[in-house]
Image (tube, rainbow, N blue to C red):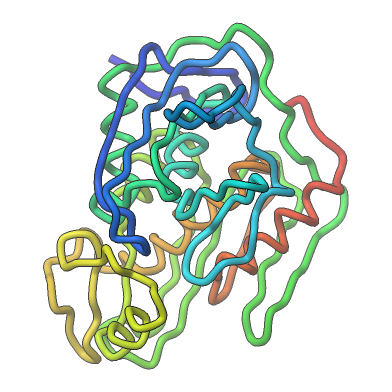
Length: 285
């Protein structure tokens, strides 16, 4: 039985509502998100408290360049660590959905997008009632830099990604991974890749009020030449997770008809590309 769309050309929503709860990576607070079917194109958010008004459509202009995660700013409210959930929605081909959230952060689950993918699979997908938001389509290459990090997007018939990382820690070192993305390949090759960090940075980050919910069951921790919590799901799990973050950070723009290559990616760098894509012509393909 085919669970996932064959490509990203259609318009899809959830066949039912699903809820997942867990700790927020940076806040350390228990939070939950309910994913709901939607007749409106795009992704929408509402809050499950009395002060919540009508759902708000998520947009690239809401993204704030926050440390170690992607945060959306709605004025009086913020929603942090959205990238894994948005990657799961965009990566599986969902184009219409509402997020009903409690708190100011999305649950980390196991540090990957796998828990969200499994939740989506539990209810399945159905064709959406309206066309999806068109995807960006490039006429000329785009290049963005941040220091020694670079991301490029080159016009192509399909969305493909190439990721490369280079860390001094021998357990990671140099890694590269590439694929032409489909929903099925996203689920098998990208979604299970977990977030990772470094043992020597843990205390400093916690002192700064970050990773309060981080633990060995929701993040890979590198200690120089070895991992504190093996086994890895892939030999090159870190670079695959970088591509997971990229997909999540592009979700609000739409996965472009382009080959995207990123070297030493970061949320800020991904956001720079997303902002450039907003200014490009849109394609109905």
